Length: 259
Image 1 (tube, rainbow, N blue to C red):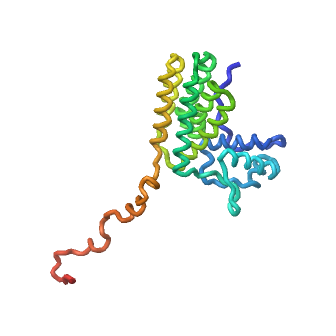
Image 2: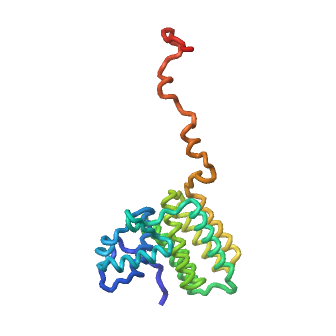
Image 3: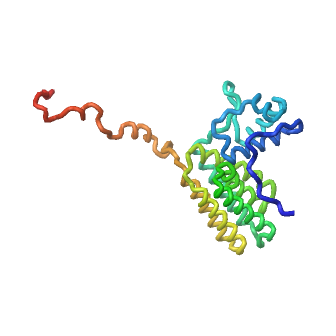
């Protein structure tokens, strides 16, 4: 039976006495991929325990797993909260994605099996449907999950887990740095990558993947920060219209010139 493209997580977790810490952690990562959990958002232990119908001990274990995966941090006063990646971490995350995803494509020594190509094409169709329907959560989730799906098809579950975490981190980065990348263009890029794989053009697929990830990164509104340490001061002291002196008519003869 052909596996269907994954669906975006529901807006609220269902209560279950059998919910495990891993399931809680995975649901939070899925919500990050869907853009419903944002950088810096607080994740209260008691609130999560109530939502999932579990003890705070299980929630704490789930948070510890997410912390090990670089998704959350804990603060003595704030408790658990979603990480806010720095500019340097943003660059590292995209570089890691380029290395891993192009590496998966480089490692291909044979044509991609038809069943896996079919799964990838179905995933792209699901992306297109979500874009047409105007469902931002479903759209965001599927656009990010394409890369996880590709890793499952080409590398297996371990690579998929690595890509899921990296993609979730770049989703947080895109939210934090206000990405302007167009969803339809991202979906079109995915379709081109799958078409290249279907044609056996692995080198073309590698080039397309490298360009795609680079384009997504280039659409981030990254601050000057470390590249221009004077950026903040430069903006503050930039020439602007004078608020008071411009209200005085220099041609007025009643005004005395001051030495």
